[in-house]
Image (tube, rainbow, N blue to C red):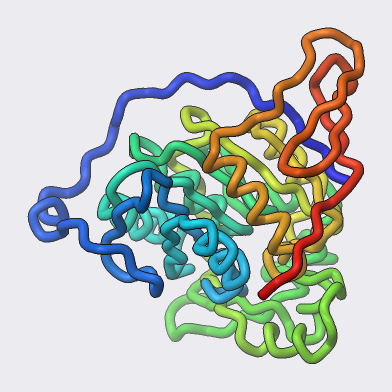
Length: 326
C-alpha cells in the first residue's frame, strides 16, 4: 500500500547565493555525460535529474533508476558524495549544480537528503527536491539527532554509547572524533536492507560500503531548501536506519507530496521502480488533484488506481505498477 499526501503550496524566494567568481570564470557548460562528469545541458526540454547517494553506499546504487530515467530521455547526473562533512559535502554539490544548465530535479537518499537540503538553497534552477528515505533537516538539526527523535532506527541500542553500536569506528589518524564510520558487516543486512536482499548481494554491499566521517552525523544544518522549493518524499515503511516514524515526521514537516512504500532504507536497491516513479512525478510537477470535500473520488495517478479520502488529503494506492526490465 502507498499513501500520497498533498503538499502545501509554496512560494519561491529570489536567488540568494552566488557561485564563486572563480567557478563562474572557469566552468562552462558542456555536453551531458552518461558517467556524470562535467556540466550537463537539458535534453528535449526535460530537467536534469541529479542523484545524491548517502552514507554506506555509492552512486552505483542508483544504477537501475539511472537506466529507467535515461530510457525516458532524461539527462542524469549521479554525483559522488564525499561523505566528509555536511557543510563540505553541501558546498561540493552546490558548486556542481551550478555547472548544470536549465531546471534540476534534485534527489537525495539517506544522508544525501541532508546534503541536498543545504546545497539547493538559493539555487533558482532547482525546481524540485525528492527525498528517498532521506533526512530533511531543519536549520540547526543534525542527522543522528533526527534518527533518534522517534524509535525505529537500529543504528544503536544504547543511546549513551559514544559510537552507535551498529557501527564500527575506524581511526583516521587525528583526534578521537576523527573517524570513519561503517555499518558492522553482521548488522548491515538488518539495518540497511531489512533483510530484503539475498545474502550474497547483501554481503557484497556490506563489504563495498563507503564510510562517512563522524562529523556528517553531528554537524548542524545551515540552510533549508525545502522551505522554498517544492518537495516529494518516499517513506520506506520498514526503514531501520533512519526509522520510518522519523521519515514520516520530516515528510509532514516539509509539506512534501509523500508516497509510502513497503521497503527497507535502501529502497533504491530493492524497489527502484518506486523511486523512479516518484522522481518522474517531481519532474512533471505532478501533485494529486484532490477533492476539497469529504466525498470520495476515484482518480488515476501514475498508472495506478487511487482513492481520495479524508477530505482529499490522502490518496491510498491499491496497486503497484509492475514492469519488465530489458
